[in-house]
Length: 345
Image (cartoon, rainbow, N blue to C red; front, side):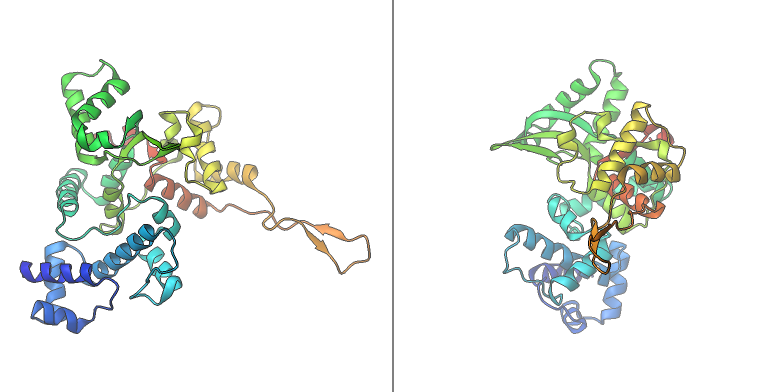
């Protein structure tokens, strides 16, 4: 059956713009669609139809990214951009624009690929240690970003050992014992993506700023293992805990609400503001963030001079704020207090 699965996997990647029907799978696998689906889920831990749709969505997204918004993008097998966008956001719980902005995110890895196998091994061990997917997610989100400035991108693949050593010395100096040093190196080699995540482009020079936890691991825990976000406000930390590089922190973030969330948590980090819970954080952001939804309008059904009527102010509900925080956590702009999951280490 493994050979048949590989044949189907290859067919999906080679024909991701085509509508792949049940009879196509049956001919490729030489068995009923139901039998193949059962064996696929046993082998991969994932429903076949879900893998099929997510892999097609991922490959279409990659094609859109490569064509840089060109009008000749083919959205098949989805019926146009609107259907593709709707299904994409439903399956991955992320807006297509956000996924396109972060080119390093591959939402559905190819089954059997090196990334898939590596993630499987890492996640299996992590889930065994953590006990469940939510605890595993909390652990990954508690691993802090590392600040590393001035290292060209090609160094990560060519001189990975040297980069890790430099990163460790810049962050910890000589304060770590041998066992502590080895533990951190293990985390970096196992859980982190040693490449560009957030960077500033200065003419043609790109310098890496942060080394972040591999977002692919986080996405798989959420999408495939049903991990849920559980945290208190006091656990939230920002990249400002590593650097005060505001220009970098907001790179690619055009949401004013996200900016206010980051600003509020930064205030809490510095001790200048305190929030006991999500509702208190919401209240502070609402006051600071509120603005007319569409700007002032002229009321024309009254005699001159016309009256200006202000639209209602936006109200930031607790659920919306939590969604914003979850999104910032997934993208690495927020992380959790490490001590909160110390027992997993």
